[in-house]
Image (tube, rainbow, N blue to C red; front, side):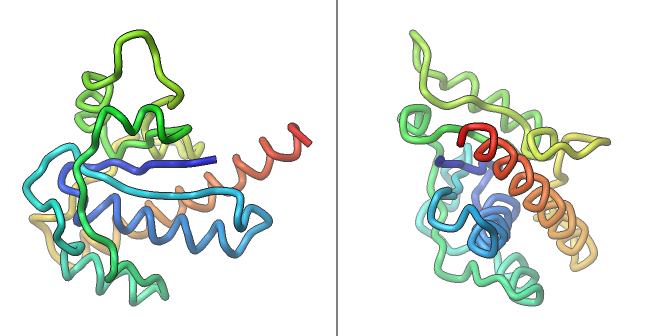
Length: 160
């Protein structure tokens, strides 16, 4: 199983999501069975590390994302991943616009909805905010990671 988390610039939400998801997966029965990557719909930050505030917030919670580098979403990702999980509706719309004609392997959806979390399905972009916004987003992503691991474990049990 391969998951791609997508946000706007791939320097705040999606790298934090990638880091926390990897940590939760490696600590579960899914270790070695699920790969996680991240990308942004925009190209402004390609090749750059995550925002320093995202790195600090993840580190504060025991997750290292400092070695990640931003990349732009590519239509080929539809063939390389099983699910494209987007941070907000605008990201999902942009990703779906790039879907290859004739279908693709990957499904696409909102990260929080896919994780089974109720409420607003959009993860707010903390880029223009401060520490409190990054903490709020990290907590949303941590809850989403827990929900995704539970969903995948259920799916694997039903397959096996």
